[in-house]
Length: 467
Image 1: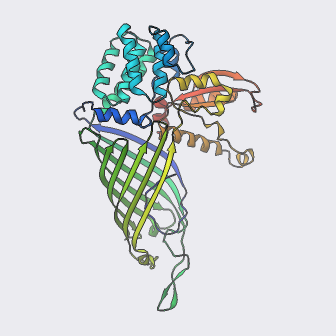
Image 2 (image 1 turned 90 degrees about the vertical axis):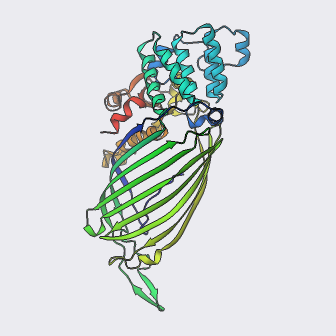
Image 3 (image 1 turned 135 degrees about the horizontal axis):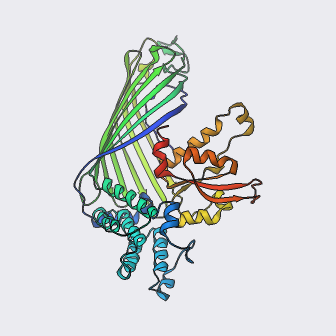
């Protein structure tokens, strides 16, 4: 289900093709929050709200986890640990198993048991700090990361350490700002919001009005979001956003549209439910006139489970006022109240769900990523029809854009590419993809040679968004 908010001006068809997006994240420093029982409770009950990522990246996987373990690629049971309680590799694998199952507190206890006997294993101390971070014990995680920094380690593990130090530093800030800028092209089939009947009934007679008028335009959108932690036991926050839109008509100045959307409210965290209450104001300007204004509010409830299921429901209402213009005299008849509501469920794919096309050809490599707790985007199903490709040579780039947007939206760790060897240079050059597995021939339904690459999303995505 896709949810969106925007100015609604009659029956329109408005496909938009984004040219480029940039995400700029800044934050104001604030005092650190002490760890509280409700915060731990929240993340234990809702581990999906912060992905159980442990070690992020093929480099860390090769350099930090040591030699390939007999326990890699499978879940370890507590009975196995009881039979060999001093085996550090076995206990480490058991901690990863608990993380995949959503038992972060159990994983924390297991890692503490390893560190009591082996306090200077960098990979264990780093995972211990990451679990603390996932449990929202930000101060404790920061201290532990500082301890890891003093240990000798390889370059791959140190990169992971620096990544989480920056994440923890941002999490300790009480007020966060996010800025978004977007440019695009639009086509609007009914910019003047004309009625389908091409007329209105007045005193029993049909009075004709101007019909629909289409236009295409260049769109610029800017959005500023703010979130402030109230510092209470539960993670209640003040939230707000301001969005501005300028849509420059390429057909006529009469159809140039400006709009603003201002929202503010509070996010209340009642484990395991989060409630968001937000009043809002919307306004639009068209043809040198104010054509639309709306005042209202919304409420949204989110309920997440540790099994990857996320339930949500929302309801919003607003009173809309449309003003008549010379080109759209019937607009004022659309004024009135509007109500919207909906509910749905989202399911997050976890390491326990390993159905993927690339995994059928390269099961060991894909399972190794997932065993390390990473999340993946596998876009191999996205392909271009050869007949359409011959008429529109740029169409494959659209499928690549969808995959890139997905990695940003879901905040994944890797985007894997199962491609022909001849195409590998393109993915290395454009997406900075790393080699993962050598080509395989005639595997299953694939009758061509295929090799596996993977892009480190966290390192590569910021530069892609600026292209």
